[in-house]
Image (spheres, rainbow, N blue to C red):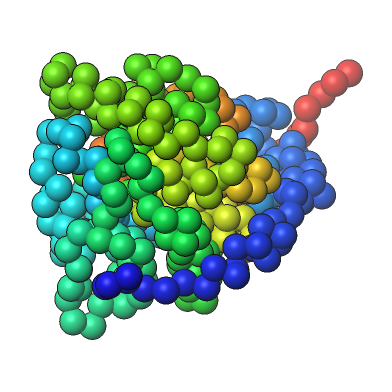
Length: 366
């Protein structure tokens, strides 16, 4: 495979084996502390639910998560040749350069949240040349290939490439842990990737193609019909095995979707909470769930995308979104906005006084 990076695919099995259930003792301790804080019990609503989940994911009743990053995985898709997007495929490489220059929406939102952006080239058609001196926290080349094949007529990638993509995602998380990252969000870039995501969601959620196929970058009615036809052709041509996450990825996925699935698996094994973004992240989560069902316990849905298939994907995943901002940009933008909620939840647990500590009379149940 020319211009590709090799990953250690033997990591996949042991990573899955290391995914443990959420720590119920830490969750109980967090809930007990929340109930004793200077507020009516449950008055912070979903923020309290989030705090308890974070405790369970990290196995720490008062977790602190100061180093957050969004992994923006980028790749091209052969199905883009079918006129499924309002933008040409050349936009993928141009946007990756924009990410590296700090000028994209995800860069702006990450700066506002005090988070970092890690761009991963999972398989962009053109090789990315990052600026000199760019650190691995800002950019990683994890190329599986120069874009996938056209899923309308055959598999997106080989079985080996599917394993490589997932293993790369696991390795990305391992590297981020080495530099102290303690929470990751998932982001994406790739012209044609909502078509692949619609195919995955239609299969995994057992939903009709029309239900899960949206307008992506803003295609017109004719473009939407081409996209629906492309998704239907992909499913009929490939017939993925619903019980095999790697087969689904191989047949109808994308290199960036595989890397993000690996990020979810690697993070779950490391007890690193994962904040999911929109439709493409939802497709990656479905792949991760098919590979290792327990991995989804370590994911939180930041928001529900305006892409119609995303709500269907979240329901199938068993995740309730915290926000609905009618966003459909991708890049990890919705997930990074959610970092503020995470910070508030952890600070409530660690900094807010209990009734006893503050000398405030508690609830009178007489």
